[in-house]
Length: 397
Image 1 (tube, rainbow, N blue to C red):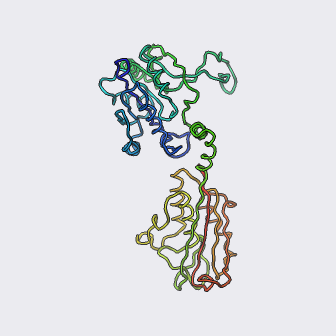
Image 2: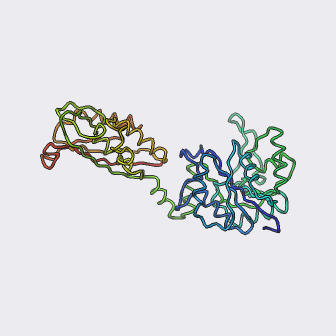
Image 3: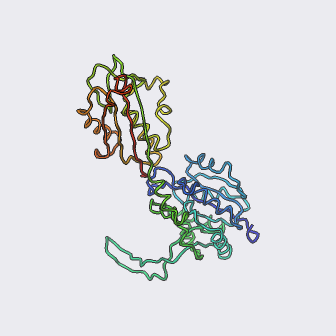
């Protein structure tokens, strides 16, 4: 306990993360082998002033958040609460989950993983002394107030602060301020604004310019640089681009259509397989899955599953692209080679390029399909089958 007061840390991690553009919570982004929310929780577990930690997270991701800490060796009790439609509701849910003995609550953004135990201690000390305190730093830039694109005022820079977290409150003061705003139907995006609205005073604790909030992709890049110092740029490169390779082969047989790259090619024989046996598309799918570390098509579309019998491989490719997108990547380019003695594939290459471009959602000049023979060598040269190789590059969205 700090000065005999029980202090609860409420870490707000329930935002939608729409400005990050990754399709998932920014709290779950990783750098240096650890998620953002893990780093934030560890900072509070390391301070000497808070007694428990409550993480407020999206209800649909709660199991995923909890799983991150199943084996964590934390010194302090860790609890979870569900987020609400607005930040102040989420923080109120966190406050409700606090220990009954809690007299002080320290509210912090889950997406500020660089907060230091020293800053936490200083803000808690001021919160205990003044009833309400927030970490903040003087703004460095001149701020202009504008209306309809025209500057109407230039506030004195020396009076302006960029507010951070933690923000520390006497619990009873916070709850009264929350009820005041709720009764008046006012939503505040900043927790200290509730106190201001209630007529209370907010004390400023000197913050830390490195205590950044990860909100946009640019913030994520800055976070990598802060954590990895000179090595940050290289890690960003490593994480931004992924390369994959795929290979497939199918036997030629009578009584089957020959479909390559989503194009039906007139020929006396087709390829044998559980699906439509589109050897080129299969190679491309394996390259994409490999780049995203999502296994292979055998695992995603097993040939023991009746629903994939005779399946259109271009439809399966669409599923693969969706899986890649959910993992936060998009396709940069595809380069593939079909190896076949017969038939001649050159007349159909442009159609194949168009099919891949359309299904993968990339520009036509980002797809390059080639065809070659093996000069009658090997099983393809003996016209026993057709094979394909593919490579691709993925990049972070």
